[in-house]
Amino acid sequence: DSGVTQTPKHLITATGQRVTLRCSPRSGDLSVYWYQQSLDQGLQFLIQYYNGEERAKGNILERFSAQQFPDLHSELNLSSLELGDSALYFCASSVVSAGLNTGELFFGEGSRLTVL
Amino acid sequence: AQKVTQAQTEISVVEKEDVTLDCVYETRDTTYYLFWYKQPPSGELVFLIRRNSFDEQNEISGRYSWNFQKSTSSFNFTITASQVVDSAVYFCALSEMADKLIFGTGTRLQVFP
Image 1: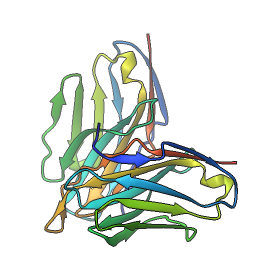
Image 2 (image 1 turned 30 degrees about the vertical axis):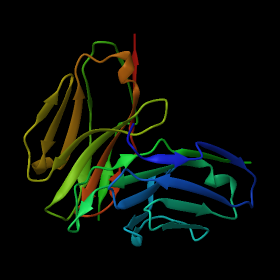
Image 3 (image 1 turned 90 degrees about the vertical axis):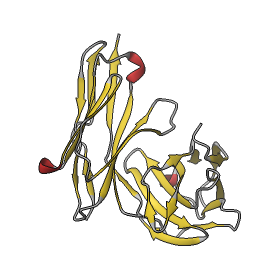
Image 4 (image 1 turned 90 degrees about the horizontal axis):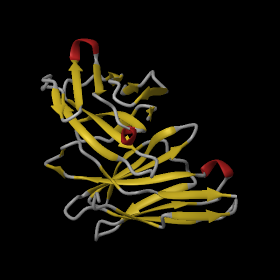
């Protein structure tokens, strides 16, 4: 158990819909990352938050947005869903202190999104 | 720019064979971290090892060993006497300071009894 909790574990929805994925990081971790794993794209970095602020952005579509709340949990919002958004979405957390990332990311079990 | 290349898409071995998974990375930074993660069929990502750029010492942990060579920008992973439970997708990843992980495309290892 990595200590990172993601909900829901599975989600099936239709094209055009909107979903929210939730992540609770490990206790004490200030940094949260979102990754998308699809068959054709591999593990793609989407976005990182550190202590409530956006820190880095990767290949995140404009239809997707995220935020980190004061209690450090994070949500990834996916809207106007398309078939190609079907993927496993991972959340990870890490310890970042004094601007230095120890590097190790602890991953949740992922949220599997299926868009029909 | 950061890049991680895992040229081996899939490897199949028979139990007890040794197998090496290759990883080549690109980075402009002098300070960085390299990782290996395992993704078993159940889907979770399991951390295996972290190595920083200043530590080229090879590491052995049980049946696992890692060979880090800065001269060739490689961080290879060897499983000795493979077992069926080693069947998984293995990802190599690179992180520059205070930054996200960039993953390779993964190598699927199948170990047959």
